[in-house]
Image 1: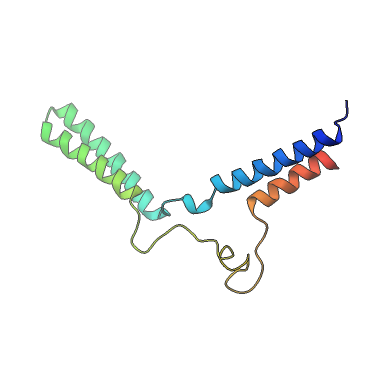
Image 2: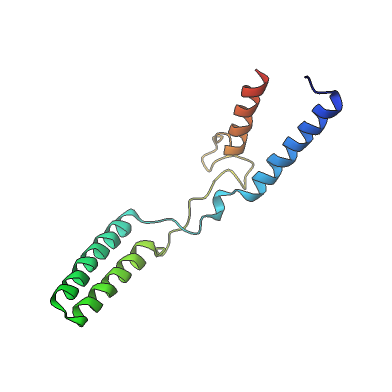
Length: 125
C-alpha cells in the first residue's frame, strides 16, 4: 500500500533527523591517537617473549623468572599501545576550510554523504 503525502513527509523528516544525529555522534576526530606499526610489532614480540620467560619460570619453579616474564608482557603491551610523541590522529584537512585540502583540491564526499547517496540510489532508483 503506498504512503500518503503526510506519511512520506514524516518519513523524510525522520530520515533527516537520523542523518543529523548520526553525523553528530560519529566522528573520526574521536580517535585518541594513532599507532606506530613498528612499536606495535615490537610490543607484541616483547609480550610473546615475556610469555615464554614466564612459562620458563613456572617450569623451573623460579618465582623471580616468572615475575620478570610477567613484567615483560606488561611492558610490551604498554609499549605497543602508548601514543608516540608528536603523533596524533590524522586530521581531515578539509573540515575547517570549507571541504578543501591544504593543496587546494577538493576532497571526496564524507562517509555520511556516501551512505546517503547509496540509500537514495537503492530506494529511489
